[in-house]
Amino acid sequence: LRPAVARLPELFGESHTTTAQGRANLASVLVARGGLDEAERLLAQALTALEQGAGPEHTATARALLQRAALGRARGDLAAARADAERALSIYRKSPRPRDLRLAAALADLAATAEREGKRDEARKLLDQALAIRRPVLDLDTDGSGKISRREMEINSPNPLTLTLSGSPMGSLGGSFS
Image (cartoon, rainbow, N blue to C red; front, side):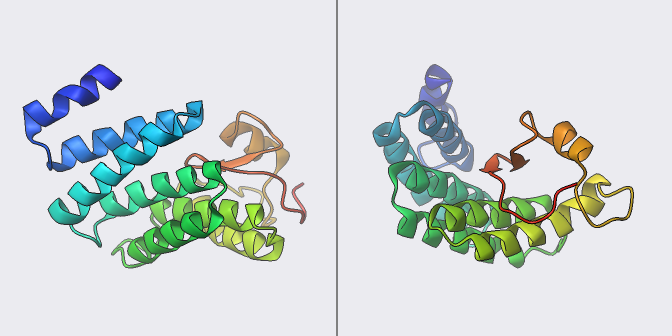
């Protein structure tokens, strides 16, 4: 992925949104692999380009903010993670599509941060909001119980003990999963 991302500036330009999104995507891979310093540098470049090119309120900027929130959580900088996740959530809430799965992902991301902060009640409320969006879009909750069945968790997550919304892993937050 590095060689492809390295070629993006010569193909599209240094501040093009394609270059920025490529850098942000590489940064996500690096965060998952522990390359936090390089990820931070790439995300800084990506966010600068996206804010200038796409705009500070664009959904592409929000996506990069969620990627930087993941970096903040990986570094243990929960204040920075929360600020980025809240800003991204604010952008997605303005979307003309109120049931957008990206909004659900932003809610789940903020829930992940809240859980790491020890704010389990807040995390649960945010995750419930995310699931309220996700269920009808993905046709979940087919039994009408309002609960996520163990089978739905298995279908939508490689680990049935972890509920995953668009890359934001959430451990069990209590409550009743059937």
